[in-house]
Image 1 (tube, rainbow, N blue to C red):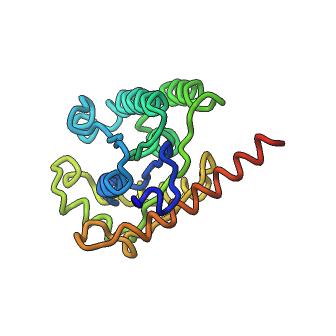
Image 2 (tube, rainbow, N blue to C red; image 1 turned 90 degrees about the horizontal axis):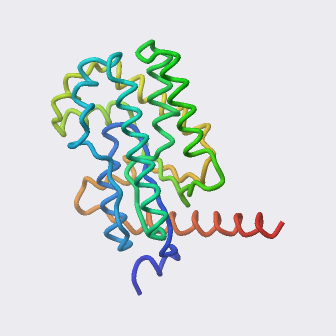
Length: 227
């Protein structure tokens, strides 16, 4: 019996991995997809034409960056839907508006007009009955010091040159965001309990939790349809 069947994870499931920068989303995405024989959907960092410019000048490039991410994530969501599921996603489309765009607007690095344009576009694309929400959002969390250490260790120059105060604000905003998130079920995982950067860390305890959450979620959806 394969692991997907063992833990009753449907073959058409859509699982999204969320969390602040450096928390281990890509590592978790790869590990889950490999264990479940699912496809992956990764954030396009290396080919992003705005990311490097953004870290040098938030105010100049924040709107461009957010529009780029929104378009790319929406295209990925459409592709996942057309494939019929069976995907693990690295970062959700919800984080862009709930955390990043909001942070830049409130900090004055995105104008009110740009922010309203962005949020109107997001709502038109995502906040409809036709948009396929994930079956489960896995939220990775840990102490700020632990996550900051990971950011430094992975060695991306544009991240290492970013102020610690930015990462701390982002960390706090993520905590506020997840505590109010309700677009789909949430499984919170502390990276101090399940650190997949350690080669011998088992994946099965996480799969067991995922199977339980998705089964409960689909039972709830079935009851709602019957009503």
